[in-house]
Image (tube, rainbow, N blue to C red; front, side):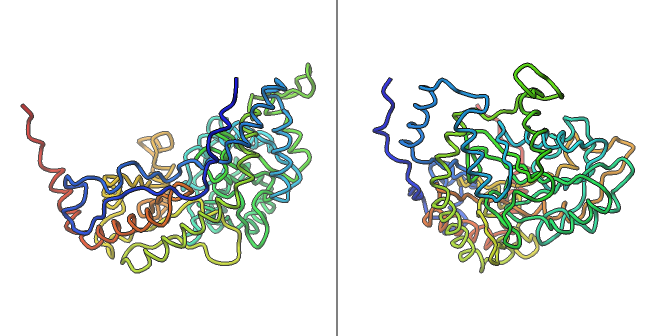
Length: 428
């Protein structure tokens, strides 16, 4: 079969979409007007690398008939990621959730594990799936990452480890977490799903703790369709990880440990290698989008963008705003509802926090965890569309929509409240 090499190279330039300007309250789609964008504007629309290069690799995979089981492309992908992050070992996996599980197993976690509630639920699920008990800790109000000052009060004789989460590319206070873990003889690992190509004090995320877990899901800055990786500088952890992802096999016919099937297939590694070739261009677009949003939002009262200042490396994968309801005149939820009606699919990310989700709520007789910073932040933040599918034109209109909503915030809130109270008229 002839491969479609006549397909155009996926452009790294943002798409240009037609949009309908909105200047008056009555123009909003909430009140029946047409959406500002004819097609949805997503927070994480996948980045597509050079199709020709990907198809060349795909053809080679098919010719070799080596589709999985630590193929040549997986090995190359692991080497390049390890070199980029400055770590000894990179173990490619089928997705980051399973990556968290095999990392927790490799570290020997048992009993209770301390982690933030302000994270995607996969972090908690991965631990609970192994029979571990997640113990949720509050976050710092500035970095939105695990608060070291709140950890010690949660440590019990059953505590075996700490899982930090780098949020939106903001890196945990790794030095303090390392000191805490060492003092209490606890294992330490990180969910680094948001932090590929991010740094703290000039050191790339990847070598902190005993292991760090990256996501290469399609919506991430580097996507492999589905996929992830666990990185470590510990040789023994690397050996345990490689056994764990392949059924606990030490050799072809020797099973030495409990394992699973978490291997990355060759097609995902080929996608990852091709994506790495465009990564710097994608990061530049993300950085440009972030700067454009920041410039246009800074004068809107009650709406602030999460800052990424300083000399550190950032991937700018997410553009996150915080909505101060008192100053903005409307809540985060009301603003998100108005934007989504305009086909701007802003996300309440993360909401609700894990400790308030059904699987993690205490029993009827128990009291929920007290995590005031987590709950406040979770009620205020929203992610706006960015990435290679978004450019200056779209950002200009999204910010104009936010400005319009804030200018009429209290009236919008009152109208929505009235609309929700009034039952719909029966249809004929």
